[in-house]
Length: 309
Length: 280
Image (cartoon, rainbow over all chains, first blue to last red; front, side, top):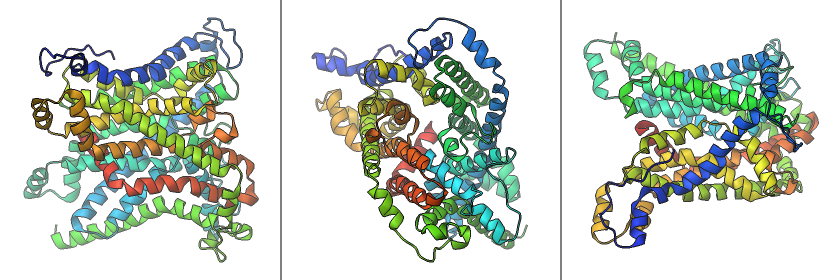
């Protein structure tokens, strides 16, 4: 993270101080280094330090101990939290990836064929993406609500079908949060997939056509292999986004019913800012960090080597 | 496979899929609008009154007359816009350096930046809260804007670098031969030519700031400092089932500015994102 200033392409023997100063990369990068150093690097190091203490949000005295780590990791709630996180993150990644790819493929096909509504669909998907998390939670609560105004249940009632306890049934609620998150997140995958699809060499399809490949064969033997890198990069990005999401869940279910939708980020939030348990929250923050980075490295190890340049 | 029928069938399936997706993406937002336009009685008719019999804008008037709501909106706008500016000030010079200089550790620093992008604000908020507290910066917009800037800088630097990469180096070289130093090259050539990239990064940052919840929720306690994200969360806490139409109106008010900003610059934003994604 500390670039050593060795310049290669600036004019030699600059006369003024100004020139020498501006000719090295360091001064240009300095603001980023300062901002990242103060607001990212230092806090992250401090989170690691705090996990070895018994600090609280209010108390001033803190002692170094391994107790917080032991407590946080042996908490009887942790397995449930991790399970809820796994469902939420795994489901979101799979759902957003597949749906994003499907929409991107359809949009590209629609553009080629000049189908009506292609741009409308693309724009609508993107609009869902800029909805703030808190608002997204409120919107989906109105859809899932079991009160008379709940959209989905009142549609079911109109069709004389049994209603569903979208948010109050512990077996159903995780799926409901998943659907709302897929609604918000699909557009991102769509953009990445769209860009990647556009960059596939058209001659590959011409060759496949000459060989008599059907549309689905073209998809599985040309499109998918060409998208490998983009899919993996996209998976990394949405995994990390989803592990860190909690604002949408706070307004949708608040983590309930019981702990059915309490994902790790919401759990950390509650521990630190409701229970004031700073050290315990730090331990779990570190755990979150390890999960994100671990998954990122797993995905990244599948990336083709040429892509690294 | 007979080409003509295959294509027709493909079109039909495309249309069907597009319709389903359209309902999935647009449905929730239109239902929000429907709820926001209803009076108390029609709220209880659920989806049957998708188009209300007596549409009213009274809910919007009530929400905007709430003594805090306009303040929330103003605070949200102010924080988001300032962070957009701040991100540009910090990220632009770095993007220029990453694009035009060769130096040891460049690739590594670029990857390092992305790594920070992966860290949840939740992780860093714990210590940041303590520092801000100790520095007496809690309950200041300054602290909030600085954290927004830090959160936005990694992605902004990447996107701006790919914008600068798109400007031919020969322009820099020509200007240098004409006696420009690097500052004036940056100021007179790189900045004007990066305008589209700059605009899109600004809008992306502003939308992200507008959506922020965690940072202001933690760093601010005074109600008159809260931006819209936290405001709507608090507002929700005060509503009951019988005032759901007010919540819908408030929610819509918080959603629309982001959507308008995004739609008006959609091309630019997607251009910057896709070129960044492809070149990565």
